[in-house]
Amino acid sequence: MSLLPVPPDHESIDCRLPPRQSVPLVVTSPHSGSLYPSEFVAQAAVPLAALRRAEDAFVDELFAAAPGLGIPLLAARFPRSYVDANREPYELDPGMFEGPLPRALNHRTTRVAAGLGMIPRVAASGEAIYRGRVPAAEIERRLEGCWRPYHRALSLLLEQTHAGFGAAFLIDAHSMPSSASGIGLRERDHRVDVVLGDNHGEACAPALIDHVEEWMSAQGLRVRRNQPYAGGFTTQRYGRPGTGRHVLQIEINRALYMDEARHTKLATFGVLEQLMTALLEAIGERTAELFLPRALAAE
Image 1 (spheres, rainbow, N blue to C red):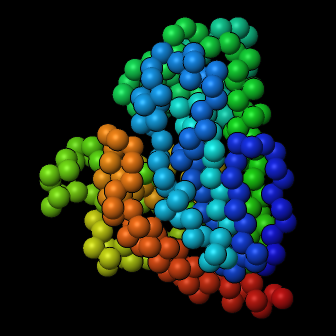
Image 2 (cartoon, rainbow, N blue to C red):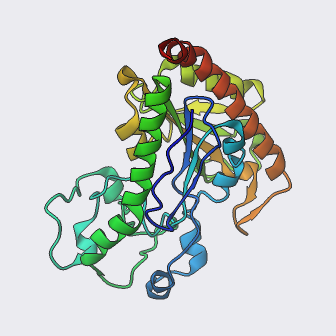
């Protein structure tokens, strides 16, 4: 299936399209962006290194083979500490801002309470990102410059996929700190390598998440479902199995492929990249089995 070009709304997104989409699968990486606006860094109360700890570093590269497999890949270029694309557009802490606020503001969520709204209040370390209050005008500026271009592109990719195949399956790719579940690097026998999130069964058909879990486990990875990550805004918004729209969030333990302190790749990066390429091939085959017969019959 040929895809229409995604509108180049902004340099804030990286949308890599295959020459022809061959399976009803899309891959996204909303948190691997590392282009920090200079004014944001200059005004931050924490150093750049602290801001970068929130990144799902190199995750887009782990799935870089997607277009070559006939699968669209969408990645945010903007950093998560600047705008979090995996949050509702107005999921914000009103105490952060100075000036008139949008009426649609949603501040009664656990993520906002933790300082992790669409515009985060705190860095990964828990330190305040800003020295003072942020002008309220920044809300719309960042929504229009980052959040909306990303979700316009994602919505278009999923709708084109659904129209062409009769179904759409989204892999929302993330990484998690090795300490996320209280797992130390020395406790290799008790590590969790991957957490699969389907919003506790609400966002993805059981046949799809079962297949991914079984495949990963067969490769020697230790897999857990929905704990501590069941999925964020993307999983909740786009996962509608009853309409043929499925979303699965994948969280990969960073200790498998990067030095978390130095923010650099480990020698094992290439091995994990090859494994994720094989995973996409396996998922592509499974989604073709489930959905392609119906799409081909309609042609």
